[in-house]
Image (tube, rainbow, N blue to C red):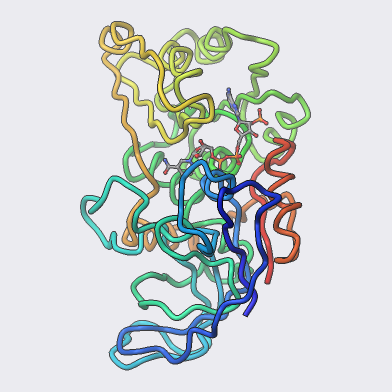
Length: 335
Ligand SMILES: NC(=O)c1ccc[n+]([C@@H]2O[C@H](COP(=O)([O-])OP(=O)(O)OC[C@H]3O[C@@H](n4cnc5c(N)ncnc54)[C@H](OP(=O)(O)O)[C@@H]3O)[C@@H](O)[C@H]2O)c1
């Protein structure tokens, strides 16, 4: 079986399309899934580069979607032929996360879905949204769920609220789409006017170019009549947090999901405290959150934005496209 494997010390030129053994017959509680698609996340890219050290030969890709080929005994809720999608934290069913690391995350501490077929616990999967392609479904476990949880599970957004979304990557575009379906007014920032136009085409109410306007919080305040937004989906981290705090209303919430500008930095604590804001870090979500999101997607008119889809064997080109920053929304690979 073909598999996308990490080769020490990492780097795209070291990525290996290798061969692994067929995973065999599912035991009790397990399902055998033919993987049809994966989506690329910043996390997968960081693992591929060796920035998040993993074992030599680790099968990459956190997010996979496919079709059940066989089932062991004691599996309930699934049938052979069902279309399923993976979960980012296979051990996190509900409640608080059991771990604060990626030691039990697929495509990192555990083998991922960049492989033709897997045999894994049925609890590591959920059903896919009705009528979605498997490539579309593969965009959900990391990017989709992070945006959903930031806005809905933790953010409790309501119709009429103002939401700020930073950038136009996978998480940000899902956040834009979910926030609009929930009745919010959405402001998107981007380095590119062309991408801002595309975001407006998807329903964004306003776009702000953060390259041209360094103090972009001023534009956000102007667009919100001086009040500031109710919620920010903070994908960029320490480099943008001071602006996000200024752009958020008194009592508003900043959900920190990304660290695109660095792993640590200074937080203007006095401004955060003075504005009585909540700064909350989140890491993806539980299986239960994923099931809630998929139930909502079955009731919503929303399809993910997939900018490009590559064949499995062209994974390096797919990562290079992600690396270029030219993408808008998600990038997928199909097996
Ligand atoms: N906590 C979690 O659960 C979780 C889950 C998923 C992802 N993440 C993290 O969230 C971040 C985004 O992930 P992703 O998969 O959406 O990445 P991505 O698809 O690669 O998106 C990157 C986009 O972010 C934008 N960006 C970069 N620097 C920016 C800045 N200074 N200000 C505003 N926007 C900026 C750019 O948008 P423009 O090209 O429009 O400028 C870029 O295209 C990453 O740090 C990732 O590790 C965290």
